[in-house]
Length: 214
Length: 374
Image (cartoon, rainbow over all chains, first blue to last red; front, side, top):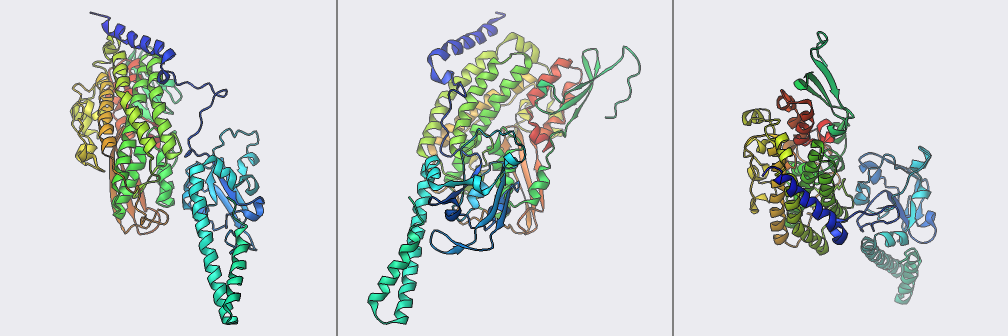
């Protein structure tokens, strides 16, 4: 019969129309901005720099190794290495970025900087409503704007952060054990008394432990 | 354009369709010469979206090209990733763990599903079925994109695959979500097919329109669903058996007439085959690592040589040709884009058709300008 196919199609339209009142997977509209999807943990927008403790300048994990600057596909990261050094979380003297800019107008959110960073310093943020009326300065994010505490990272990516923190605690323990062993050895060569050596090792290990906050 | 001036009034009319015409699927222009309503000449004009993809990839490291491949055919980033990493794996002789191969198949077939659903929606929209089929298609596509987001972190620019595997493992919950989605897809496909398959108006409009003869399709190097709609049994998944496609049972649907209707039905049938592959892959996926930890992602320097990796992307044969000179970036990086090569045949399909039908013929080719212009 002519028109049968049209009627068959209209039956499907009706099924979807009435079905959208009762079936959840037929009506998937979200009334943004009143309603919002919760973003999955893996979700990524733009990079942030992490720091330990309360002071962003002191606890910044970035050591200005510039790997991310080289590997960034659109080359949106600009880093200038500092002249002096500051201690990192295990107490080792490291450079820090005097300038760390990300041009978010160029950034394409590919996450390669996060993958190549050996210091767990750069991670991806989830904030997405970022329009600005300042086309140049507003889209060039400086070190201060990019710095976020580790607690923030734990909040937005809880599983990833737990993994990172676990690894860093282990690294710290290893560094402390190494420092203690070195101190013990140094003490042994200086004075033969074994009691002194253990005391030195403990005090050397206690100092950098303050840098890690969990 | 080298079109000669129109001889006099009442003869031929030259129309420039695009580059911003709503149904040209992006910044693409067709210079059409009309005799009344009939097309007597048509020149596709493209290049408006040229972004220097190949030279950028040659300048950067091997790793840095992966996010750029996302942006070739921006509807199917997962399959683009796969084509590129396959070429690098051939070049550097990298093995891929079992589980990663399964995850690749799962995400690639999900990509094929969402691409075809979107394409059919757009094609029907071009024909005048305003909105309804497209909204149904995008409703399902949205569910796939949600899965991609929770797996890779981004909905469209996934940047998920790496040479030697995939970037992150998928969780058991994610696999359950995919199983759940794959369970309801056949119902969607039935509805989507019933919606317009037997519609008399659609059949009158599309059957016999834009016929691509078998010989012409082969000679022009057309690949993908367009070639199969003309009745040529050629699917890289079957021919090359790249990845682990030899383990799955699936059919290759073939058309008979090579007209717009066949190309439309080809997409619906391929989605059904994708669901079959997904069911098998989700059943068999083993546990294990997803990437070989020995593979150097950063600073990969393959030996001097060349490799061509090709896959069956939703649009056709997507190939990446790489030449390595032993340094950290490819000496030559070349993309074989299915969209552009399928598009070169547009004039032959449109000659003698009505001007309104050029729009649906173009829609049935399935182009994404990001890949055509690169």
